[in-house]
Image (cartoon, rainbow, N blue to C red; front, top):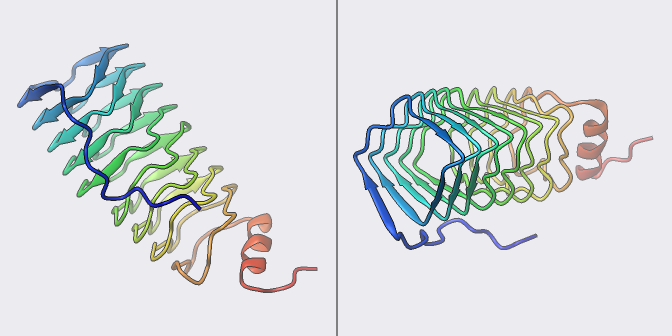
Length: 204
């Protein structure tokens, strides 16, 4: 398994955007690289196909924003809010989240592999068909969340709470049921066989 990436330093910023009002703004195909966004209001912004590479977001409000086919590669999000935000077909590989809030976050498709979300409160969030390979979800709270038809193989889940989480159709190879809370989690028959094997049981 790859080395954990939590706690890595933020990329250096070449440009700073501070206290900007992007409420309701439409972003289409914009390109931002190594930009520091501080206290920016992106509430209800619509983002289609924009690219953010190695950017840092501090105290940015993404509430009720919509992102389609956008790229957030190697970005750092610190104390940002994502209430009712929607990400569809987006790529957030290697991005790190620290002290963020995610109420009612909706993610459909896309690639969040290697994303760092340790301790994230993702209760009630929805991930549908999302690639989360080797993502760091250590200690994450996923009670009542949905992670459907996705890929959690190799993900860091030690101490994660998956109580009542709907995991049907998601690749769980490498999940150690001894290190997570699975009370009331919803799984399919194939996953039941995977978890039984992980528990040392023989499925016939």
